[in-house]
Every structure is written in structure tokens, then in C-alpha cells.
Image 1 (cartoon, rainbow, N blue to C red):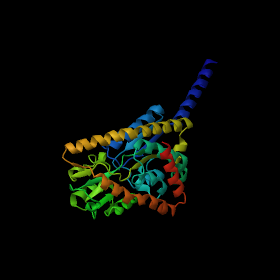
Image 2 (image 1 turned 60 degrees about the vertical axis):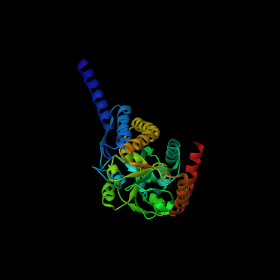
Image 3 (image 1 turned 135 degrees about the vertical axis):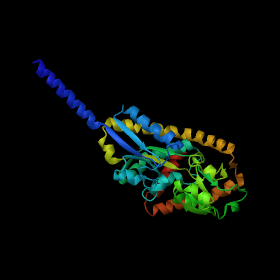
Length: 338
């Protein structure tokens, strides 16, 4: 009897190990951010670590940084097609496929980053996940918003009136930012961030809408002389998404653990980004870049000129998706409730 009992126990153990192995997941993560970028250090790496911790190693995520698997505009399709299982998707790069999700990137959409983050993530869970992410066969597990972007300028100029900006060719990350630049009398030039260094060096553009903290990551301080400090040119949103097919392969427990990791890392990122941005300003100034504080009267003039961008967003996006007005109203209500 003992040998038979042993065989039965061995069979049960083998079945359990096979069941566990079937639940284990090895996921490829595609990111266009360089390995040294602050976003990699503050978003991607902490998320991967949390997922490993909360799933007790049953979900392994391997990051492929610097566009090894896909460039910024191609990240969403890379996840949808199976080239990668997960990816860091810049909202501005997928405006054609997910126009409603660009609402948080409107110039001056919010002033307090932590409140903006909370409102936007709630909007994603309430409406955007079902309206845009799942139809694109991906599921959002984390969201990050960055501080308001600034003007990074190739040359140090005085900005005493709106006219001082007229005609400048400015690199923009997406069409919404382009609308803001056009409203200010400048010329928008869309291009990937990876092309910006050479464009500034060669004079193809005069500047860019950019996050101050990312200037050192792309070495823009080598080819730019100045950056503004007090404009609200729009935030930049990022999502970590997982292919819905891969999500469904995870057990309910793993799904809960991965979602928990994303929520925790995402919610803590806003306060961190505020500190990182302030630190970057200080270091860039110490390195010789000019920090331009635009006069309050000119800031007000700039804000007024860009105010129409929000109204145009509802009209333009609404022509493609009738939910635009509802999304705008819901986002503003969530912001007011913070």
C-alpha cells in the first residue's frame, strides 16, 4: 500500500506543479524611453519590481528600453500584434486611435498634478477603458501624468510680449500641442522626440514643447540655451497597457496583483514628478541654461490664446466620437471634485 500511496502523492504534486506552471507568465515590455531616462527609473522599473513582488514571481516582466521592440508611435500596435505583451504608450502618439484619451493633455487642463492624476485615472476606469482601450485590444494597468510642459528654446530670447514668440518653429509631440502652438502664432513641427536633438542642432526647429525633467535625458541642454518655467503648455500622459489576450491568460489572483501594482506606482508618481521637475530646473540652471520666467501679463495672454484649444478639442474629436462632450464634462467634474 505504501508504494501506491507514494505514487498517488507524487501524481498530486506533479499535477499541482503543472497547474502552477500553466499560470506563470513571462511578459515582454516595450518602452521607447532610454534606460537612463527618469521615466524608466520612476515608472517602468518600480512597476516591474512591484509586479514581481505581488505575484511572488509568477509574473515576470522584462523591459526592452530605448525602442528595441517598437518606437514611440508604434508601441500600441506592437502590443496589439504580439511583438510585445506590455508597453508604455504615450497618449499623444495614439491620438488617432484613442482621441478621447487626449483630454488630459490639453493646455491648462489642470494646475495641480496630483489632483489631475486622480481625476484622469478615475475617468479611465469609468469611461475610457471601455470606450477606447478595450476596443484596441489592450487594457490599462497604470497611468502617469507629467507636470505641465514648457518651451525649450535653442536660443535665449526675451519674452516680453506674445509677439516675441511669433514665427518660431516648435517641435510638438502631438496634434493637440500643435493647435496650442498655432494659437500662439508659432509654427508646429511634429516629430519623434528621438529626432529633436539633431533638429535643434541643425536649426530645423527653434525649440520644443517639452518636459523640463526630460531635457537632460535627451541631452537637449547641449543644443538648447533656455527653458521657460511658468507656462502651462499641456501635460504628457503615459499608460502602461497589457494585451487583453495576455491579461485573460492571467489567473484572477494575478490580475488583482498586477492591477494593484499599477495603481500604487501610478498614484505615487505625481508627487515624485513634481520634485524631479523642480530638481531638473535647478541642475539645468547650474549647468548654464537660462530659466525664463515669463511675465504674468504675458502668461495670461498666452493662456487666453490657448483657451480655445479646449473648445476646439470637443468639436474636432466630437466629429469622430460623439462621446467627446461627455468626456470633457466628466473630466472637469472629476477635477472639481478633487
